[in-house]
Image (cartoon, rainbow, N blue to C red; front, side, top):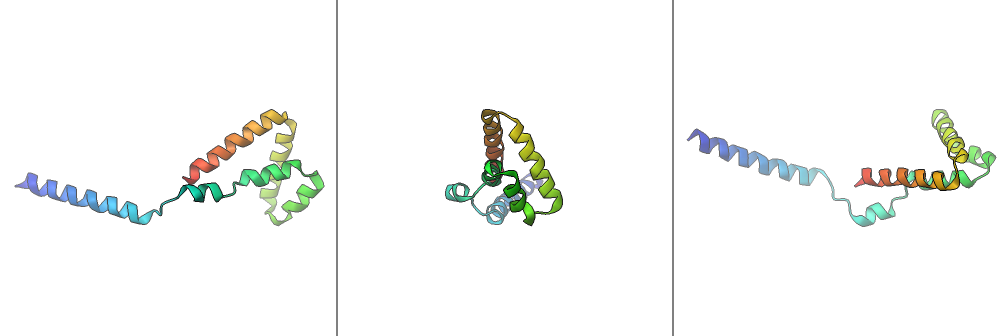
Length: 100
């Protein structure tokens, strides 16, 4: 009898938890992922801007964020275009994977 009771409760709770998981997390469709603009796109735009224009564009950012972004721009600018593009693509892939 205890075995049946324990089995009943185990099945009941597993169904409830599955339902709770389905309700609590909205489904992300493929169009949501495709339409989302990655921060890497904005970073690529900053890479091709002259440094003065990029610094002016970043004035809306917090000081620490702005400094970090400018450091990354200098770092990526020192790489070859192929290497910089490769690192950008890998970073962008990671961003999309975390959104799924």
